Image (tube, rainbow, N blue to C red):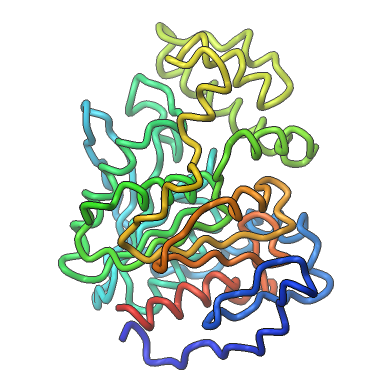
Length: 348
């Protein structure tokens, strides 16, 4: 067993019943998420996920961290951070969201939780994330699945025979689901479970919602424009984003960037290239948990509901939680922290 603590108590199923909430009932062994009334708004939950107060205080995972550069196919180099726990009861690989990094609050907090319970942690940065803009000439695109999958497979070898878990958030959840659909050959040894939290399923549904919300648009525009300026600084002979940076929306920048610097001439072809199709997960041999909220302001719940799942997978849809939120209190573990702990208790 991963931990010696008791598993979460399963409340009565009527706390989330389809007839009362319009949501599908939760799986029998999954506890509902019921935040305090003042934390229920989706924007409160979403904003809390990125507030840096959660990174305060000692973090033994961060103290044990060693930077790693993983060389992937075609010579692509991805930066990560490995924290080996002396007990090494498991290895948890974290995948951040778009314009996040290994230092994202939700990654640092989640990593700390599992590290304190005896698991080693690997936090992977996608290309051009986490101050890694100088490592590769090419730009990051969400379609660059092979290099992320290759890096995850290499990181998994650090488990040294211990159980392996993957936790992806938002776009990292999209990568986690694409890893799940590519696992028919069980190419990651001893992989026990994949967690996709607030995953992007269909970019066509998610991308416009970012621009429609002022706070979302401001947040991502600030981070993306900074990232593009860094890339141009490191490779001025390859990139001139002057015209693109004049745009004032995520979709506007995307529409100009793709034909200028990618193989995709339209947003439609680009978004379709990394969407998770309805039947992609039907044959995944590894257990998967899709965790989302009906009030997520970025991810339409219908996208998650459209997926066909097999008996290994759980579709967990809460009424509240926002995007990457699921806060039960300000300083305690999130709902998904407790859920991951429960699953690891049962499988490691």
